[in-house]
Length: 174
Image (cartoon, rainbow, N blue to C red; front, top):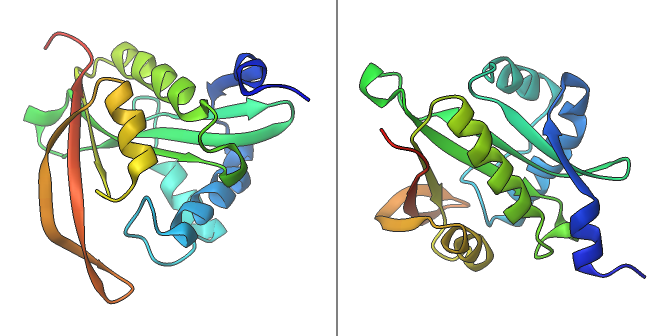
């Protein structure tokens, strides 16, 4: 049996292609069902994913993590704001297949996404997560993200108010 470290070396990070959408959708829907990473409450269908994909041009790219023939995680850069003043700031999304969480996939994927963001002339990445997402917070802190603050009662999920934690990282000079 391979160790996590051995598996980590065999994980390939690459730009996502449209044919990856079904796997991206599967992993995203796991995150929605698990209620640990998004305020989205309803599973995403194929049409919603195609619309999402259309919004991810070269600058706002999507990366996937592959192990063998399996997609085991994905990450994307998303527009933070349409205002020109924020063109150097991207918002982050990252989702890991349930079976691969806690095994270093997120760290490898996030590092590659930061490199991609620098190449696309972003100087800062922001993210919004649940304060109770302990594994996610640990990943972001390990990768140098700082906690900016909590938006209390920022959204509603399953009839309950949910707080959202904002984090940021400067990845390049402005």
